[in-house]
Image 1: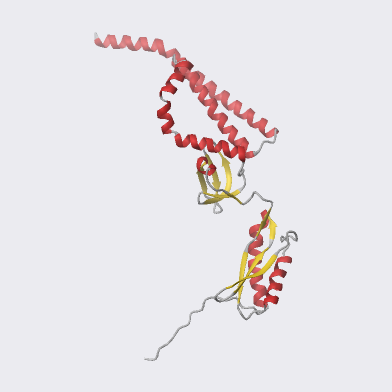
Image 2: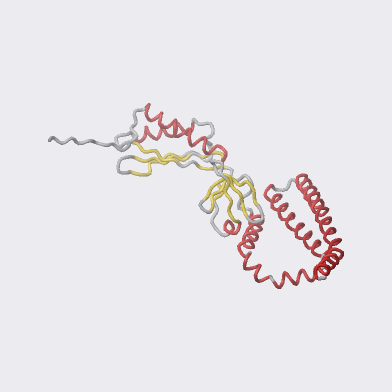
Length: 270
């Protein structure tokens, strides 16, 4: 008798909720397809409108989340949970959700601030939170970087929006800062001429702003010269490496000594 009662109860539940479950599954499948089409259409519209790459990816990510939340609300509505009831449930659980997701909310707010003030964009090389790399993607909650040795770095937007950021790609021109030390017996005028010649002869070094060579320090074992050429941002590292190598060769050819630590062995007679 009890078994028959359970069977009847299960049958009644199937009659009541079966169509709703099938309807929910159907709406989820169709809704997911509609969301995919909306995202695809929005992406094409943004591409035609020449939207900023960072803004495009951020808005696409945000739209995807919003549409999925709407779809979930619609599916819940099939089971009799109306929007009013759903709002009441969210309100009742608001405090707990807020406490649990406070970090995520801060990261979302940080992402919005980044998109508004644009301290960096996709493709820029930045340094922040002890990490450095090229900006690969700005998402709703995080920013993805690619390090020079091809590692993926993920940093929360909340931290990025509330801390220092060094953007090496923000300016069109950059100054290459180098220091060369020569021996105290070296001719200062001749050394400056050699250093300046290495700068002016390099094709990437700009005439304006003019390169600078100055004796800046009388160190313990060397005369230190600051060497400051200006280059286009993209030419920074190539110029740095070229001048380092060519200057060493030019100083050697001129017989100008570059001091380095020496080890002197003292032999004691037994």
